[in-house]
Amino acid sequence: MEETPFRPFRLHTTDGKTYDIPNHDAMFLKRNCVEIALDPDSEGAALKFAHVAFLHITTMEDLTVASPA
Image (cartoon, rainbow, N blue to C red):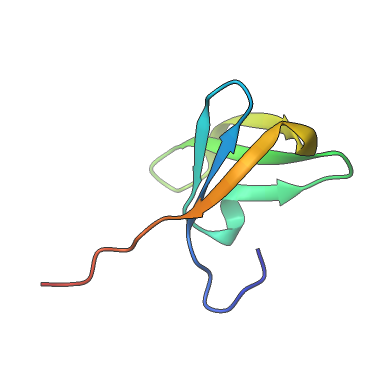
């Protein structure tokens, strides 16, 4: 989360859901879980949040960033 520059990534969970984390403001670390911002409005504020326990995160993968053409 604190890597510079930030690298977007995807979380996979035990129930088969995935969550894309496009920037460091999209996920908050808590004591036993992560809080993931969902459905940003036009100003980037989250309209919903998902709470995912650390034990339910199965894998993380980098999201590739398309290079400009």
